Image (cartoon, rainbow, N blue to C red; front, side, top):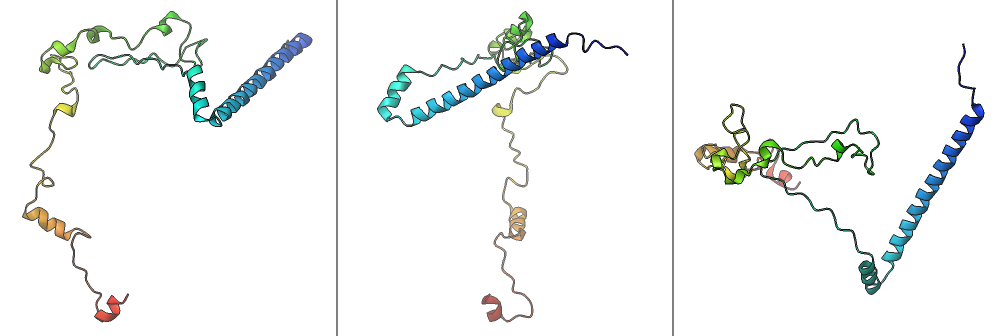
Length: 185
């Protein structure tokens, strides 16, 4: 059986050697950056209040990215987690392809229309269709069932409360013991 594993052994060794040296250098740079960051944190912790204010003025924190405002009941689309070759961000979630750079939080189709100008009954998804969503959310609805036996006190409920364990139940003494022996425990 013939294989080509040992044809370019010297070239393969040199390629492996350069990859290994690059890996070692990258690991060392990461370690040095971590040590430097720890030293900076420790230095800032040991500063006085005035020095710390001056340091924060010179080194402001980067502003977080503004969250995009979504429309009322806008549908969420996930851009997908698979088949993203050559990701260009640290988390590996965005690829170089144009379709992966698309803004997936932008409204599409029905979501482009402003539903807040519609009557309250029409502010639901798929209005007029048989499978439409009946409720947007239950914030506007009072779901209290006043006919539920747990929501009102009557004779039946008070009788149940007296029989519940630990709810004003009388303490029974054990049979066959004298009261004084039992109470001394």
